[in-house]
Amino acid sequence: MRFPLVTVAALLFAVLLAPSARGLTIDNFEEGDFLVTDPGSPAAATSAEQSGLLTSNVLGGVRLVRATAGGGTAANVATAALTTTGLDDSVLLSHVGVNTDSTFVFIYDGVAGGTANNSAGTLNLDLSAALSIDITATAPVGGAHARVILWTSTTSQGTAFDPLVNGVTSFPLSTFGLLNLADIRQIQVTISDVSAANAVAVTHIEAVGGVVVPEPSTGLLVGLGLFGLAVGRRRSEV
Image (cartoon, rainbow, N blue to C red):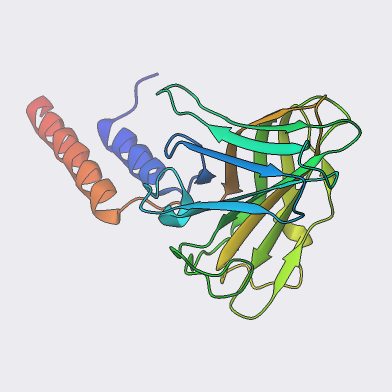
């Protein structure tokens, strides 16, 4: 079956203007090597912040990492380590200690040197069209757990801790019913219960879904160009 070029042009024009879903990278761990270690004593988290990162790799360009080792002794150590290689990199979360575990927190607020865990973040992110926040990780079954907390300019809400699966753990944004998802200022991802027997490697954190509409001028120019070809051909056939 042969279609007139005008029909083909119209179809391509419609495809170009149709919305498409995509994921928004929160952190792909492809930039910013770090090593954060925390002993179980004294009982306080160890934090490290990186700023000036590419926003295509880290949402807001700022990454704050916290590690907290449980157990109450200096022999227990929590370690978060990222060494970028140019391949598909992961941050390795590990724990040293018997019958104890560690907790790790990743905070994205777009503020260098800012105070974490508040509504002063500058992401100004609209997640109202997104479906979920997903964590892609290599993790032993029955080991670590994860949760997500979102801040708006007025309030915050978090999920329960869910088992971190070997693959993709999804946190549906439909569960954040108290928040204005069009006003997200800060995102926090917490991974807990990392023990000596179940180290975790996190590869990606992303918001899945959303609508992307290409520039109308692009579709218009392509459509008009194809239409012009069709008219030229039709005239040549007369």
